[in-house]
Amino acid sequence: MCGRYTDLLTWAQIVDLYEITSGEIAPNDFRTSYNVAPTQWAPIVRRGEKGREAALLRWGLIPAWAKNKSVGYKMINARAEGIASKSSFRSALKSKRCLVIASGFYEWKKLATIKQPYWIGFTDRRSFAFAGLWERWTDRASGEHIETYTIITTEPNGLCAPIHNRMPVILDPADYERWLSAETPPEDLLRPFPVAEMAAYPVSTWVNKPANNDPRCIEPLAAAE
Image 1 (cartoon, rainbow, N blue to C red):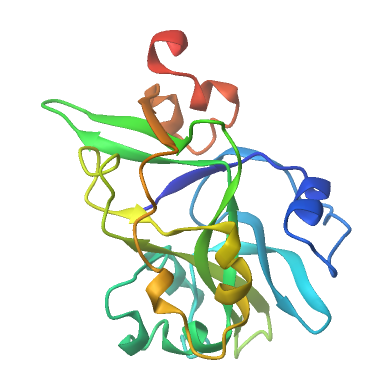
Image 2 (image 1 turned 60 degrees about the horizontal axis):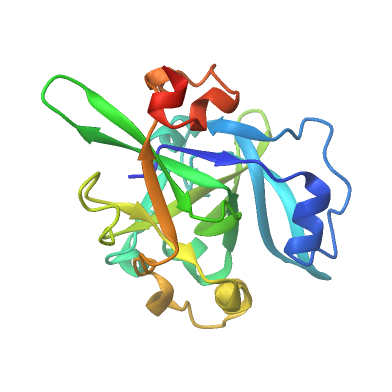
């Protein structure tokens, strides 16, 4: 699974890098994060009426048919395998695909006595995008509207496999438009990203607490101690 990640781009950088034509102004509650955790709000990119738009959504997808929003806690990830047939994700896969902006992600490796966190990303520290899905849910009792998202996961590549048995789907920038706009869901893109340009290293268990949100989260373990 992917249960934590980093998002270190400013809103202006998101607008520039992802060619945003709507949502150019940062929401008042936007902030960069070294430790994005489930139920927190984070930026995604999706198709709008006038092109690509950036928006803040809550992590943990709530299907439109859900009776209450608590189901979102269980849907921070969507397994790529068989995703088109799963009722929780089928509708979003057809028409509500998005890019989840990231600068790296964390996975925990099971050791003898602890789970060791690792930071995983690109060797040049460039930002990238996960393949995501989003939904709009309305509370029938209060009329509250919430937009949420999930991160699609797949089998691990050679770098991630020794650490965890899943990894988030990382999209090549050349595939962004196809993922967002293709009439038929491009499920062929839901595959492990090649290892060549990626890197991973252990970090301090400081990252284990969502409240800890500072550069110490991504420092190599030796430097963080």
